[in-house]
Length: 417
Image (cartoon, rainbow, N blue to C red; front, side, top):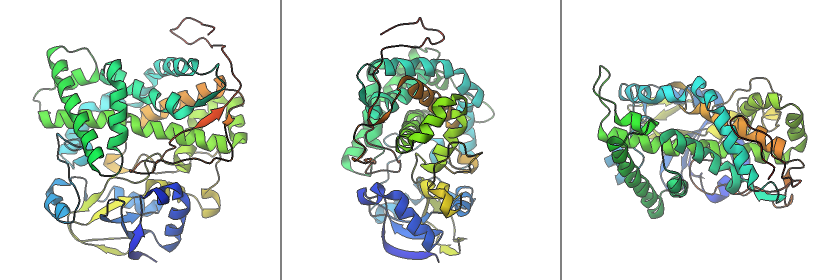
């Protein structure tokens, strides 16, 4: 049965701390529910796989919030426009604008382009592990899962190394629930990238941001200043935050299932395929940003009025791709598991190939370099991100057999500590 119960509150710290159990309860009650988000806004939330696919590709659900801005503000929701928040990019655009904006950056994120970055990702992974391998203990979020994706996307975009910590902080705060601190972080990120793009125009350095600043008029239209900034913000945020949580969720799953970690440690060639199971088991983006009904429509048997918001719980829908008795079971040898972790349809995650390569390379390095990897305190439990649309561990405190032996990596000289 579909429910319309405004008492259902999602996205709160309590909900996110027990998300899988909460979503399982919702799935038992129906495929779509009228809920309130942590910021108080009402949204139709899709929790099942097949209906999730339908919603993600629905032609009457728009990604662009600006036509609905007045109504959303009247309902108490804060809307940040392009140039100060998270707008002006392909994520908040519909065709034909979405098609044009996506085409401008798509070549940098193909599967082939991602594979060509694998050797550099391996170098960066080993360098990060070198910093803590001799300690026997580490927080893998602070030491690995956050810095690796940030380093990769910043090298690709051409962000100076000394500013990466700032971008990491602004992104983390900007992905939390709406608040003054969250809005200030997004304004700071926009301000910095606006200045950086100006520097790239004056002194191009052969990176992706430099290439985007040189886009001129063609038969597909011009990349405006607003769209350029919006695209840069999207590439920084989405280009690393998803991978941070993909790696974190995968490691949390392996730490909870040491027999699965042992299986992959003995068969490292299977790690890329196992990444798909990690995506199904615990999707790194918990819920999509809202889509808005451009006219009255029916979804999952429920009447959605024009202007109402619809979101898909990717974490829930991905588990729903399997029968209930299999959904909660991790199996890294599962053949081609279905999931919606990267979305579906024209807005399918552009950076999915890069995220997959980063996760596969990073996990292989950690499994090979950290024998005896286990929770530092098995009784402590995982602390999950308490706010925002992403899902991932706040920290991963682990212990392992200390080692200073460094494996040779292509392109680097062999070192021993």
